[in-house]
Image (cartoon, rainbow, N blue to C red; front, side, top):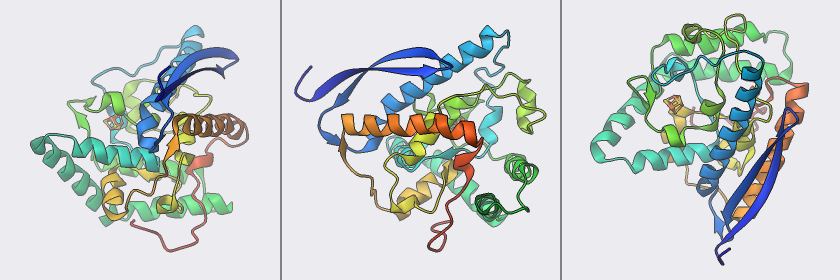
Length: 278
Ligand code: SF4
């Protein structure tokens, strides 16, 4: 152990099976973006353990490189992931950056024009308020409407993710055992997802959340650059052990929430101010 890094061992239990992890984190205060590689690695370990369970029951994951069918869906990410996405784009060579930025801008403009975000937020508010007008079918319709517009994720290249190592946690968690072609219209009756117990993507939604996204349950990936451009980075600095503890606490609560409520984080907090930036 050096002065600047500290190593610890953790055990996560997924389906009662232990996943042993050794993590090395900075002792200095850092932005949560710097901790993402660790949390993404944890997300992948949790997902691998869940895949092992379904495969042990004789099922097979149908996702494979070059499919990318799920990458035309709306991708809900956290504030910290949004700021990291903006960094990733900034770090790209100029030519590539221009292509990716154009895709982000065109997608965002299109979905705003067709008022897709208004529909989504309206439904989330209904769900949050327990309105009888909310239904899972209406939610599925909004999800499908997004896909039907034909705007793939700005990072999708020839059916593969061009930021694979840094893809958001929710992308890691989306795996199916149903036929891949069914993902073009993902509905409860056509899609069989690998159940993920403990949801790193939902833990990240809480991690370091600031007033920038206080009224948002999540950021849709195509909003990331716009959000970052309009809002200074308000994410706090904390030490590696502090961020790790916060992440584990949030992760543990996703296990509890999942038992009570299958879609907790899709609900949007009742807005206290006007909708920002959407
Ligand atoms: S970030 Fe990668 S995996 Fe996630 S939707 Fe985009 S292309 Fe697909």
